[in-house]
Image 1 (tube, rainbow, N blue to C red):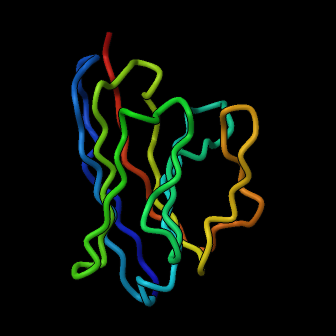
Image 2 (image 1 turned 45 degrees about the vertical axis):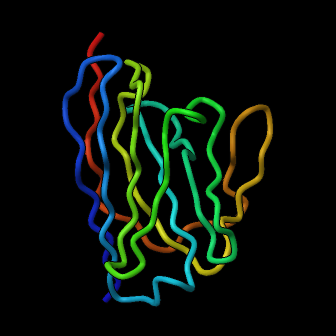
Image 3 (image 1 turned 180 degrees about the vertical axis):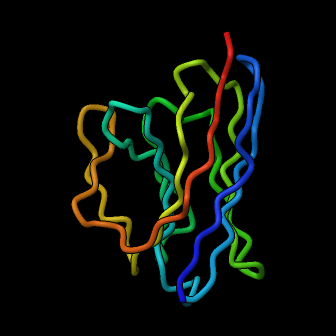
Length: 131
């Protein structure tokens, strides 16, 4: 039974930091791409960061590059998203997701777009950044 459990969200002032975690189980962690998405009610889901099984580095959408850091703890089948210098526009529900092998994202106009769907999703964790 595949599970992804996201946690670590909360309320923080602008300029502050949060560290999200995504604990996974039920699949071979090293064989999957793991990604973070976020969504604001009424808006489309946004691709934030992703690490494929083949790359040692992660992809970041332009709006978070230099502020967010994706990391993996393979021994614990867990990924983290360290979010620094948070801005009010980072307010959203953040989701982790997994799919085999590659992220399958296409870069265009400063953003990534999913060319291939992610199979497994966590439940989301709310991040609220106050100004």
